[in-house]
Length: 383
Image 1: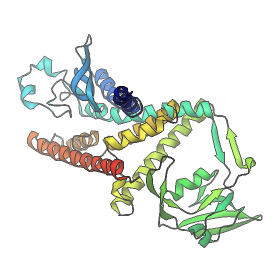
Image 2: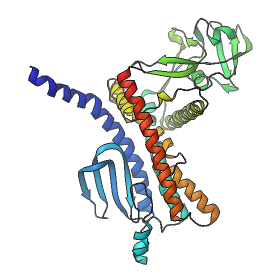
Image 3: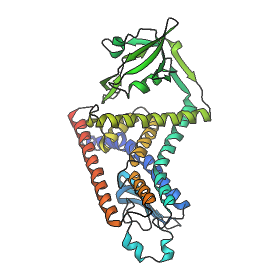
Image 4: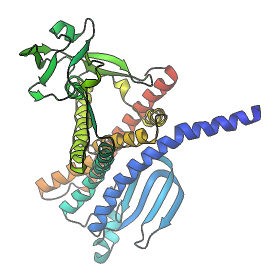
């Protein structure tokens, strides 16, 4: 029995921890790189390699256009390498470009017009948003929309809501001038507005009242025990079944809701970064590969649909991250192209090389910091 224990434990680890992580990340990375690839092909740019993962090749094949499609051993990203690129981050190889004939240079990324290069770079993050929209649209069409009426059924003691004067049975009509149709709409304001006054309009006994409440930054735990910080007022819905609103959604309505869901993730990410810089959020909440792996394994226990939903959320996050104005990331390339458009010529190769090295250093430092958080979270027991 003992002889079987170790192999079975290893098999269980792979099935419950590794497989969900690889499944989610492969989907997100593949569609990101597919965006770059598709727009490059449309613009007649020769693609030398399309890789999911880094490191040694596990599987590879060359298509009729000469592109080498690769699945690599380290599933932490991917890349599309164009003719004339020096490396996987699409840094141009100026020496190789100078040695090419005029005919060969026609198929290179660097030879294309500024708008074409910008379109290829922007297509990666855009593909992430499209993937998320497709998944969310499908979910909304299948499940419809379920909402809780914004009628207060619980008020936490000593909370911001109790101090502000909320009462049970109050109906929230608007927050900060925005119309409220469900409790989720209220949360969209309070979760990203810690320590900032929010103006509530409520309906009580047929009368309209104005109430000001300040959400407090509060530590909470999700269903898996992971800790996170968020702004809370201290109100909740009641248990009355009549407060549950269910609406079926057609394709158009589901698509609109998918855009709203993506916008919500972007909005919360922006506020998290703002509060992180302002010192309201704890930097220990940043997750690296190990943290994302832990999260995917936890969500996988809820079922394949929840795992696909997580893939949609991560797709939006990765799309956003790649748009950061950091050299080496897509956003950094777009900054270079904006400078080129303003100056009328590209930055010199030496300056670009220095910027790429700085960008790589920043990305690696952030990755190391996030991974150290993961290790402390996994072995130190913090959420």
